[in-house]
Length: 334
Ligand code: KG4
Ligand code: ZN
Image 1 (cartoon, rainbow, N blue to C red):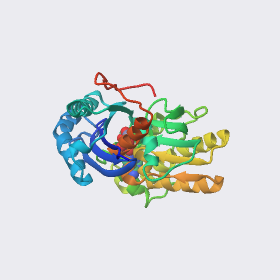
Image 2: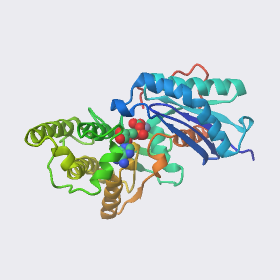
Image 3: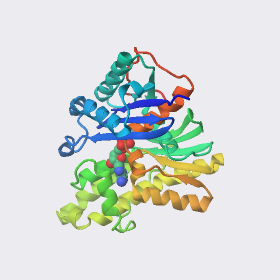
Image 4: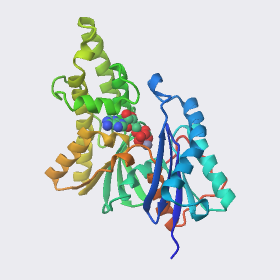
């Protein structure tokens, strides 16, 4: 039987990534992280597009080299169609379409958020129904998965995403972008109960993270009046307290959803699932409830093309192809 080799491209935000997936297994997963945004405290869309243009060909070449395959071995091309920054998405989709056209290959359009969930199926095989908390820089969602491609968003954030809350608090503390991993690092040595921040009270599975951002802002303004170096002196405890509040907010809803629906296979996905506090909280909550929990490897938490490739693989099996007229979309219905 012939191997199914999928070339996958991810370019929705500030990571240019290419992967090659063979029969659902990752042969290579190359990621170029754009450093240019660090000094701006956030992703600058125009610069992201330009960096993708520079990175895309070398990243694809590296993915082929790591996999030990040639262009002629590819069976289909998968790319992130939505959601994301439109200029960034355009680079990856144009590349994927050109590659598919040149080699006369089928093309598969992938939804980035669905791919974050399916990252779980790269190394493991969660059972259905599977409940996934997807937390990234742009999204916070509780997703019910009935099958690989049969997913439903049960609830999401009405304002900021959890990752955005991490990054904005980090910025207020004077930390460079993306601040999430740094907050995680400081939090590991801090006291999570030292400072109290409010947890947002939203109905059902809806989240809100703009409140904590504002409360940290006012808190820092007040304390800095007394001591301009308050943040620097209390960095670990502030980070631990903020992280604790964000994680509690996420876990309360996830636990409620799992209980309401009677689901025992539960995972986390997206960039914030790299957070060590959240990983620990999921394990503990899982133990208390008798869940089987799923936590992706670090490299599959933040944006990567391997997750696009695995999604492409499931779509390939169902014959879910798109034609060369496919256009990317900044916001797409699930
Ligand atoms: O999934 P992702 O790579 O890109 C989006 O689709 O948004 O997620 C990026 C987000 C950023 O907000 C980043 O700060 C956050 O994930 N992040 C973390 C950690 N690692 C990445 N947040 C908290 N703790 C971490 N260890
Ligand atoms: Zn993402």
